[in-house]
Image (tube, rainbow, N blue to C red; front, side, top):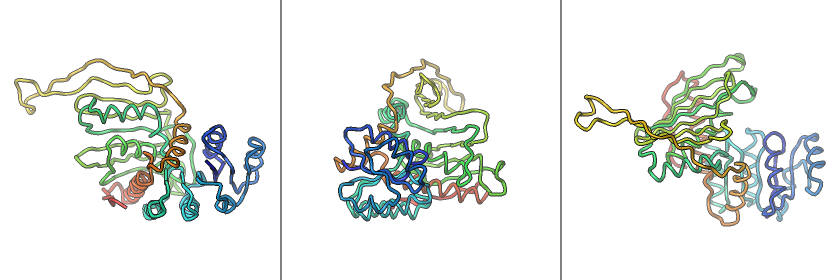
Length: 338
């Protein structure tokens, strides 16, 4: 399967590393406008054509799928050209910087019968896969709410705020676990390091889902801790996904609150505390699993978990969160469907 990676700086080089090592893929091109990056790629991958112009990739009929890992503002332009050239397309997160652009890409992919996949990496994490199974099997009971923290000290970005940089990960997981997209979002935050540019370093957001379910997300690059944790609260059990833990990525808590047998709920509740289960996980690099999922989608023509619609839902939540930030935390209703 002929593959090309457009954008090899930053995270893009990890796509190059994975596809170059996969027997299922024929990495034909690495494309980047930066001469230094091209030199580095040529030295590392001498059997791969390294080019500057994306049109070279689009014109090659031997390339059936393109990975777009360029700077986020260029995602729409590059992905649109690739879809119009009848290529299957993978786009790193976020899919685009506006809901209208994301909807356009979804429409182009559907109309042309193309695969459109988005880099929601955590959906291919073994712990999140197991967590989704627990939710779907009813092990946790009815999921009431989730909350996530994605904080650290740096890297401070100058072209996007912490919301757009960090929150896509946790929004995509919340949507995946709930099996739904949010109906509304409210967000507050502040700019401490780049106040003159209005780039928020810290954001607290609440997403509202059908059935009174909620997801609360805290993102920051101005925090003393490095935390990558998501907690799922069900009415039977609770679970925690901790991506920074070396050996306990997922824990299931047999804890809950129940009304006493002889009293009404208003008169009192009973705390139930049971065992803590650490499921055995067969770990694998999430990016490799994500790359394999893209190849499988291209081969089978079946939509992947992180399809264009999931990317659109995340972008609309991000866009709504930005509007809420600008309005001091106002609740923003989100558009539904394409």
